[in-house]
Length: 283
Ligand code: SF4
Image (cartoon, rainbow, N blue to C red; front, side):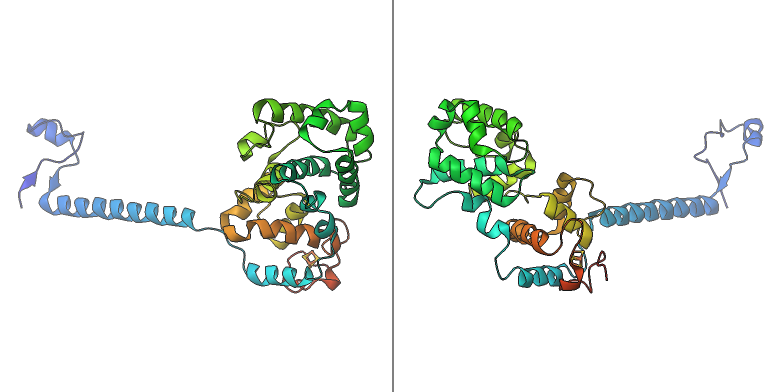
């Protein structure tokens, strides 16, 4: 068997002296062995990388979510949760133009944070009676606006936010509400949840899931998200596996479900159709 030059940094030349120092002289046989070993290692590492990539691409999808969602639909059949009768879409009136309705929906969402639906609804009714147009809202004094929206949560702060938002809407958006999430969140007091809900309800464009405290809490309880710390994490995780055609419905379903059964501190698990499959069910 002929001796071959090894691919080894310790082999410096053909002299016997140099070669004697090198313990890595290879024969054809061990070249073959080494090559196939390297090939095998390289192939197995490629396979491992591919498998790793494949593993990363596997989307999380909770078991039995369709059954759970179906049960929630059944529990929500009566449509008598506060969100059904006083949610943001109910805070406007049929006789307004589409543009006015969009404006009303945005204002109701801005009023709704940290506020019960019936309190928001009552404030919106007073604003509509006063004349909830962009022109009137530019003219209205902070004092009068405060009177009209009181007692929504953080009403003093909301008066400031609303006044700034009204000006921006007139100056930067030609008197209509912004048309994208990116523009909506530029308005003071408008965060991602409000922006996605505004897109869903005011523009009828589903570009993301509106995740409020109910959607966030229930998604965690049901194991639909993994340790999501805030509504934004919940939104991203839900959007990863929930089919897009359900994004609008899931907000409305879970908000009402959270108002009536899966309550924040004392969920009514004994009345819940999901109590056999929910990982957070209390007996
Ligand atoms: S079993 Fe209890 S915790 Fe689980 S979804 Fe139903 S009410 Fe909520």
